[in-house]
Image (cartoon, rainbow, N blue to C red; front, side, top):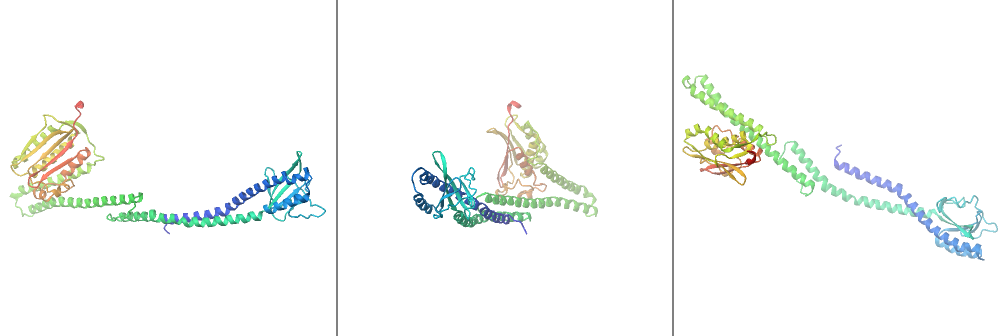
Length: 473
């Protein structure tokens, strides 16, 4: 049997009910009995003290007849529902409201000891064998001239107290049952508020474990359960997106590796079987070499992205001149630009403009952005690279007048392997990793990059850097 939280809660609920029943059965009668005996004993002793100081004392200090005292105590005995006795120190019963006609010989209580109660002013039992049932008894001395003349005793049957105890016990049972039934409301709310949402969350977790990341946990409460369900839905959405990205990543890698490999294999087989004559081998070997360069760039890009983890990327921060970096990068494209009749215009702020960053990584950013600008620029066009300082930030801009980027593609261009349709037509050697690498490096530097582009008119990439502290240069 599956031990669910709900079954454990039900079991705890039943155990709580059983313990409550046992507690009432074992402790309530004793506590109630002791309390009622104590209260009744206190009432009896107060009356016995009053009798000892008034009626009973008159037997010894004034000419009050025994008959007169008997009449007064009989009425009080009926009122108190108890037996009242006057006993001599020797145990002789001088007056007993339960037996007004004792005959010529008064009864004697053997072994009568008024100190038997110790520190208590009452005792229970058969009162030295003078009762056939268990009674509650109090003993109060009758004093006159500082001498104890006798004792007033009052006796109350414990059957009346036991009846009250049973009555209280019945009330306790009824109250316990009512409380137990009312506590079902707690069980109901636990089921609705805790168990049902928790079960939905558990089912959702099981679905996610099976790979169904599109399953939605439907919990509408605004408490911790609702927050947990929303967090699980958010997590599953992110995992689903990551899974989709992984599938696209694998598809893109497969596509970008398969195309050059297919070309290389086809050209080599054609040269081996004679389809391509020997005099043309040099030309096609050049094509094969270009394809291997493409594979090399793709592999290096993947390795670079694998190492560029924003939480673990190691940055060698230093102060360097960003203008110098821009000039060096522009010089590396001199040959490529000459072939396409493209001019690179440098608009640099001052002779030197120092920033605080990883020089090698920033140089890679400028190279990737310039490489993209050259690839997608038309012949006889101009690429403008600019540096500027605004609001305590250094900005580097790379602007071309090429094909531009469609608006729907701008938010996707930093994804790995992403290529817009226009870029795929123009750039046969691109890997789709350059802008991803740029984004990763800037994220590691806690900097941003923005894109402004109009299809058919060109694009501008602008990224920010932290300026150097003048005192540390």
